[in-house]
Structures are given as C-alpha cells and as structure tokens.
Length: 209
Image: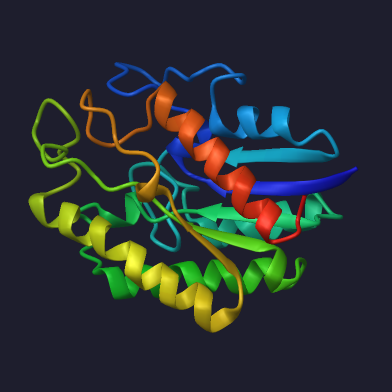
C-alpha cells in the first residue's frame, strides 16, 4: 500500500468554522478522511496543524513553521509515495507582513524538502481557499487584516506559476470550496467534500492513484 502525505494547516486538521475552542470535524467529514475512503489502495497520512505557516515563526504558538517540522515528518514516515501540500493561509496574518510573492518563496522551501524524498511529479501543490471579506473583524479572527484578503487571492496565481515551473501538480482549492461565513477562514462540511473530490480527481490525473 502506497502512502500519500497530506501536509497542511487547520483546513487539513479539520477545524470547525467558528468553533470557540479547537473543535475538529470527525475523520469521516474531513477532506483527508473522505479522500482515504476513495483511495482503497493508498494510505492517506494526515498531517494538519492549526496555525501552521510555510516558514514564519508564531511567537505565541511555537512549532508552527512547516519548513521546520516537514523534514522530521518526511524522515519518520518513509517511505512516502506522494504528497499534497496546502499551506499559505496563516502566512497572510498581519503579524508576518508578507506579500504573496514572499509566501510563494516559503512554499518553495517546503517543496525543496518534499522533493528530497518524493518525485516532483508526485507532489500536488494546493493553493488555499480565499479568506472571506470579514475575516479580520474582532468577532472572527483579528490576527488578519483587510490586506490579508487580497494576499490570499493572489496566492492562486503565485502557486500556479511555481508548480508549472517546478513540474509539480497544481490545484486551487478556491476553485472548488470557500470559507464558511461563520469565521471566513475555514472549510465547512460541504467544502471538505468538494475538496476531497477535487484532490482525488487531480491525483488520478497525475497517475498517483
């Protein structure tokens, strides 16, 4: 059985939109769980973490830098046959002051690590869903600002160009799902279903499944 790594943030972990605490959708609702149900001959290795970034350090919540944890996970979970990489939402937070180009540089560093263990043509780079227009408001997630929304929209084009240049697969999650109105940041149940179908189809086109 071949193993596919799904490496991401809270939208891979399955955070319920608008949850007061870190409440998580059950396995059979999360897009990774739904993908697993479709992939009888593959094992989906779920590695989602709330607040995870590409390269930025969250001083309030240590251990969120994807570039730091990824090499350890890649080594410990060998052999890996493919990977789905979906990061960038948390990089849009105002504290990091990063534009889409800089976030793209961070995702490339993560791709560099993945390619040490997995052929580039078996890596699927996914640009995240767009942040909703009210995400920055106090009752939602004030770690973001209005500018964050614009940056989140720009990631699709940046990631698409990176994938084309590097020879990896590409999928825009924003083409299939959107952030729930409860927090303007996270996938709801229908979003998880739509993303699972889209990822499954794309991995098939890449001859990963």
